[in-house]
Length: 247
Image (tube, rainbow, N blue to C red; front, top):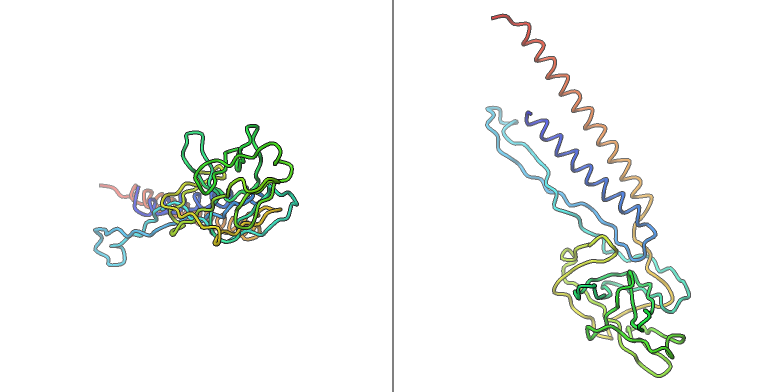
């Protein structure tokens, strides 16, 4: 396989990666708190042995993973006091079954059978003290969540929802189940916490933009395919001509 085939193969693999990311974005248009992802590629140039200066360098593409768009989604009012949305940056903390902590912006809360306040996928929501927030039965019908994250019942405060921010959003790794992982996060104090109850944060995916990107990827792949077919025809023609020579 010559170098041109390797370059085309790398290009088509990058296009497939882009298509997978765009398709995942479109699939999560209605997912609360979902952040649009974008693949990150990097060019690498390899030196060749050709005597022609223009052919000495070959450009390849490297897949550096994906980054997520941190733009805030629109607020969708639901009227449910257990639905919350974070205004600005930050994530809710939830406790995984193995005891580790994950992060999410999906604020559709619920109360588990044991009284713990839960977030995404029924995972216990962690308060600013790193522990689940317990809601007694007599307070479940009249629960109120303040802008600073304080959870209050008829008898008074029950805990405060912790909101964690990260200095570098690139360090936040998406798990693919509505949750993210990150390290060295900072817990916001009550004065800096901004939580809005009675609604959810919508996905920040723009369907029209993603559909347009999908069409562009398809056209780029078609162009790459035509170029590959042309190279195949050129090779066949060269082999046929070489076969006409006699020793």
